[in-house]
Image 1 (cartoon, rainbow, N blue to C red):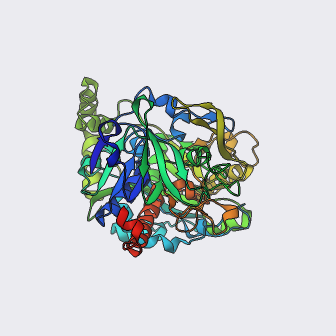
Image 2: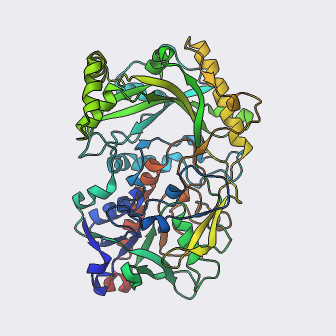
Image 3: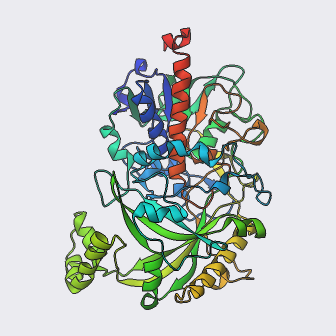
Length: 542
């Protein structure tokens, strides 16, 4: 895929069939899939090849809601590759219940079900650097991994097994996939990326029902115009509603905002430590609920075994979805961390000393990884039990426009993120069920943090995961959301949105695999629509 700088191209190069705004996993997936069909695609990326000090001002937000652990990340990474620049590569599959209307979860329910995404799962996995797109949830994992299910099964009436899969970069097996450095390797001769190209306004016809072009601003503040037949907005859960709201010259209140839904229902994942285990006690728990290495046609991939609240508990006790897992906190002198740094070319004499100090641990790890197909043994400080919980959609948890502006004069996003007691109750209940399951399975009792104990009213130590979602939610009725089931903005015939901002609810899993599956599905939708109009006068002009 050709990558150019906006400053180096002429105005005649700013006309295309499909314009994609944002070069993160969602935007580049749509572009790659459409280019594979021979369609002309132009991707606009606000940032460059690396994040610079100047980008801090562009990533700024005005936060008036709950505090965020990493406020600079919520607005996304202004760089080629978008959020993949900083993601950890962890992926999962939404549960069937996540798509359903749940009377105890306000504004829950997708206009599609889980089955609508399954046909796109394997293509999504290939884009994401994963070995498998389906077949690794709950009890499906064991035959996929070629293993017998553990004899000491979880009581699935309380907690069910869940698994996360970790992305691997095709060129760097020690890292998860980073889309930015791989853009030039994508075989897509009809697709181009322009960096340092910030979209500052979406221009529509007088009715607001059709996008004619977008304004794009480059270095020095020069404003250019990009024309296309179809536009895909893939700028993330904060920048996407911000741009829609700021595009208000013709449409009062912003594009797609007839019913005041743009920016509402901001959700994220809340996560934190709910208990700990001492290293001397933790080995049996880590062997049971740890990491597994599974082969696929795309190589070896690591999976993490966790536990999630059963649907029956969620229904009976009016809880949201929640999962827990064991997180190893390694010592500074861990031999395996040292070995990984050396393999990455980061040579330190302390790492050589660490490796020589415990060659037995390295040999045991080599056997476990290559023969047993399980996670590496580390020298540990302690083991954390961590929880991650979905959020209840709240119309007052939202993104608005601030009176403050960025260096280009665009209003900053004003973020009013809200949390709820339903999430805290869920985490405390899930923690208690985990402690009960550990006791039943004969595993050491975790030391639960006081705030996570049943009945506690102390604030839970949970922070956001930088997974902003829900701000342009999918809905069948335009009064209750921003995009329809095909991710087209309600009331606008050629504007679509890709990314987690279309999620009505977010379950407990990291969003990227679902984001990419939706992006593949969207590409198929656009390809079919453009093919159907290929002989129209408008199509011939473009």
